[in-house]
Length: 373
Image (cartoon, rainbow, N blue to C red; front, top):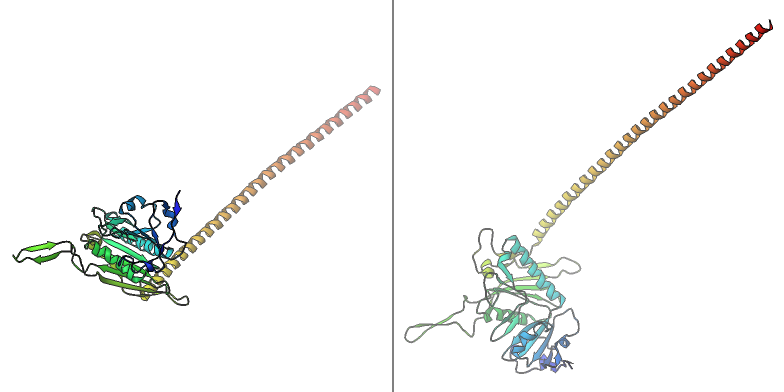
């Protein structure tokens, strides 16, 4: 009979996990993996914020088997056998989805959408770690383990955790991830900080040293790469008392070469996601107003035309009715004339009959008078 998981404590009480559990919320519950327990019971109570669960002693072979059953995004350490499950809240998912939609629109406008593979939250397995990004992309024509661009979003997470995660994507891939993007939603102020990161080395990462004999030796497995370099920073400040938000920073740009590992051709270029300044917004609003006015004028003209057509139709109908009435009157007059003629004929016939009767009477009277004589 399956059982529900019972928490053994919280992250703040855990020891021996090194930096893997660092920067998680201190009240994150910790559980011990048990075959007989139902994974669905790990779901924490509903919250708008991001929620986390730590599962200890989780066998590496079980990750692929239970991936569909696991209630969240995976971050697994094979050496520690610790699995962190992240259940994103609504603000987290909205931010990731909005960014994805913007990138899709730009790719379609540039007509390169078919060349981009949308990896979403596909898990990447590494000897040191197995992890899912919030969103990720790579060239569609290449079979590669790591994406070229990865996105990490945080709502309840600390800035340090998001930046630690994006650093793993860049350095853990030895520079195969050419750009990392972090969206940090501040829980208290509701400000949003967006940063882009690139490797602080030229990928592929190589450590070259010269032996005593003067021979160059390339070590591709460098153990301590430098931290990623922050390239761009945009801060969206929430407006107070209903005022519009303010934006600090010029633009967020994903280089074409970083995403598709190719030089842009004709009509192609970097993927800009430019925050619009106040002047640009005003200009756009004016343009929109002009467009709206033009649309309204067109609508009014159409309405006027329709009204005129209706009036013309009404006039035509009236004319037709008048014509019909005239025709009916003519018909009635003809009928009346016919009736009158018939009446006159009848009268004439009656007169003629009377005359004939008189003539007969006179003839009879004369005949009688003649006989009497």
